[in-house]
Image 1 (cartoon, helix red, strand yellow):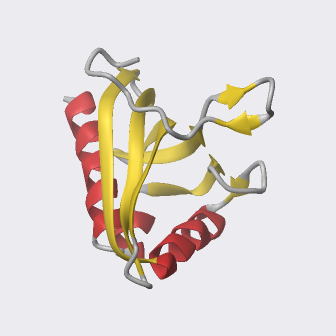
Image 2 (tube, rainbow, N blue to C red):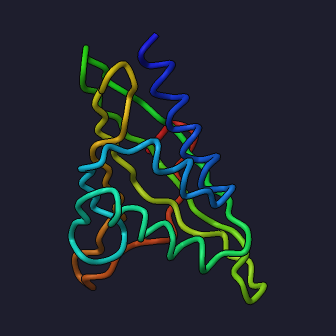
Length: 145
């Protein structure tokens, strides 16, 4: 039952992002969320910082597509953690379409007053050690690797 509700919350997150609805997105995070997003700095602390990141994304894109693939969770009574692949893509304000990139996404949730909320998220890409650059052209296969 809890895992079903957690998956619904991640579905609500995807829907809120596609709708560019900061109010809907806000309801899915704890007020003290810690986020290690794809862009600097190393971490963003608190709901205001998390929403500021999404507001920048919303300002850049005219239309947003957000996909989540291979979502898996381990669920306890009051905490849960999960991982997935995610891709943000869409059409920018200047009309250019972007297919985005697949990233590795990790979610940590807490059950607060009966509601599962995202308390931590982290997004990353693999690193090419020799060049020191992120590898952003990978796609998950159907087996989840």
